[in-house]
Length: 292
Ligand code: ADP
Image (cartoon, rainbow, N blue to C red; front, side, top):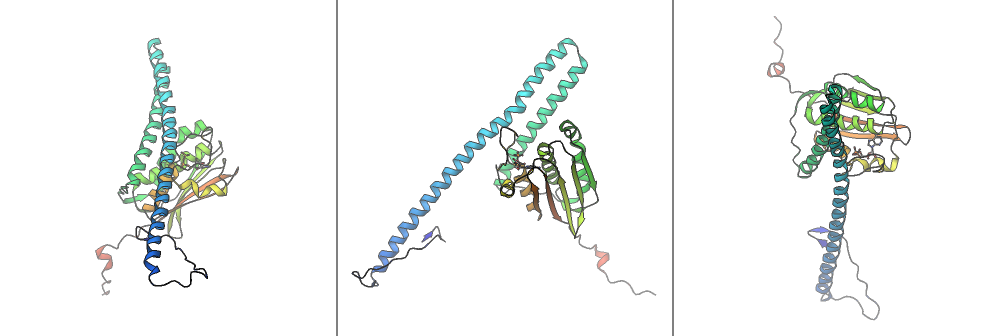
């Protein structure tokens, strides 16, 4: 059975005693039958796939609107607060409301950026701009940026960063560390988080370890897929896109990402990238001049 050029199965015809052996003229009939069966199986599969895609889209739209609504609601709320504080001339409250508005706007920006990434990655348009990049610098920047959020969540973020230099896209790697660290804070149950960067066995490694809720073995592979989540929407918000984006970015640069985790004990996400070997400069390739 062939569907659009690919083999999808086979049918076996058995002849009973009363029929006797098959004759060559039975062959065209059998071939016609096989074509019809293949077309029917193919159509049924396409139909199922289309139904699954529509169901996934509907579920995503409902999650996405919920996710976008949360920061939007607090944005509106804090704007009202800001107006009231301004009317009272309470400068300190104006400043703190402005901070809260900024935080909600940042959250919205991050959500919209991940929505844009779905369509970019889906269309195979993840353009990488590689340049000499030190993963340690990126980790330091991200950890700094999350200092306030970590403090609010009550978790200490410890950084052990040694130089790990390669030809990577720095903005995309920033996104990788950002997604891993924001997950560690979100699912980290307020316990300390360790971020480490270095080179091991010729590969650059960045790992983010938390001591939070952890992930069961059955879910560990699934969570790197698009929209897959291992927690209930009620307890933790999220699109289920962060780790999928991490995997796409890391794999596009020839790397791998993996997780080690146990429920209740925390998770360690590790990204491994090749340390790019720079081609030797022209004068380094010349044989050494014989010494006088
Ligand atoms: P989101 O956090 O928006 O749901 P992600 O793709 O970042 O999406 O993560 C997918 C799922 O993986 C999460 O819903 C959660 O179940 C699980 N997960 C990710 N990071 C962690 C972590 N550090 N600890 C426990 N679970 C995690």
